[in-house]
Image (tube, rainbow, N blue to C red; front, top):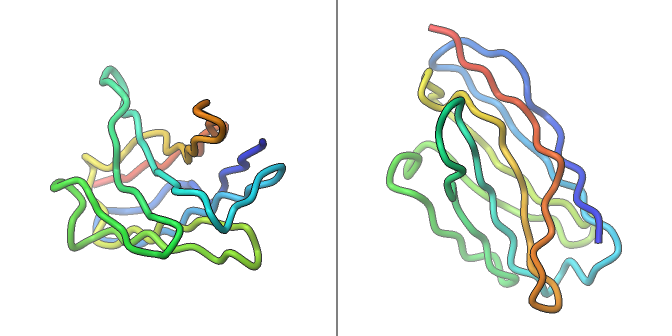
Length: 114
């Protein structure tokens, strides 16, 4: 299983960014997928999750601003981030679980400037 995250960058507060996570070596269509983030000096936290059927849930801190979606045909997970603020600055990771084992993407850095 490999997860390749991309799309991070430097944006200004209030702007938007979309992250992608390309999966391989797994049956992506039936897998629940997660987005996590880790800000400098803080523990990694769950941003949100999406089930195989497409229903998603979110951390309170991003609810209403972030949206998780998936394209099963392209084996790709997305994280649309709107109204970004400086507290969203973090390395963002995609994650899944296959055969009761966690697999993580390499992370993509999002920096939000004020």
